[in-house]
Image (cartoon, rainbow, N blue to C red):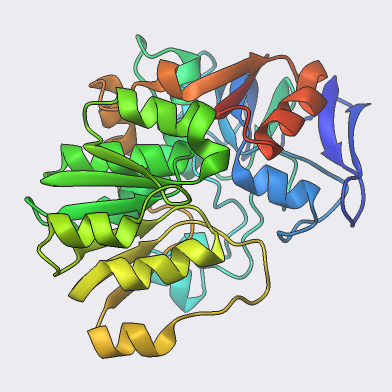
Length: 346
């Protein structure tokens, strides 16, 4: 089978290779992949900016149909439509796992960077308790957004950073940022404001301005975001700032925009070891700062429900539906922000 593989350490070194179809043991399932989204993490791995263990098949935002189950598996059957949490190989014994936080277990080896992932027609999945059923009527394209949406649900719903009526500012109009804005409005935000840059203008901010849930979209390189938001809030600042860009200037801007005693939810990865951080400003404002990585169990079924109810207009977010043979063009478009969300279909 053809698979997209990160072959060795360093920038680049991603190739479409012919690899054997995986075989499973008694405690695994074999999943026939139907769709897999391209995550910012995949792009970071391409650029050597995220941990990974090559050679490894990329891709973790997967959905598919179980083709085969191991002899010890009695919770799943061939034909089941599933998505899966990427916390495979967590140890189960450390204090993190034992307190229900396998997503940050140091032993974790997730599909797409720690073990072979889903940029291939088939993937074996070792930890079947991490699988979730999707509704029969849900398209595989929609289901491919469950994993990134589960991140959003974890970061702004389970953390309870938003109180109904809050003014919420989101930085970064990529797929995660837009889903964060839509979920924020769904759980009661009074006003949702999106921040982007010139690079976002043609596709991303254009879409934001078409979505009723996003009240205001601001290009920070053309408009004074601080002036606009302080005008809306009568000089107080926004209640919640969601940082979904991973850009150092946006992180600093968030500290300036959020009100005293406000909240910041950090979602975006910078891809850098260190950045400048406005520590004193945040201290003086007594900000509640929420750092987030990956997902929790509770967020997955909620994400599936949000998609099923139409909270996320997935068809507007997906700009690229391609075969794995077109991976280079897809990656190039995403690097240059000529697309929003890309899905490889199998």
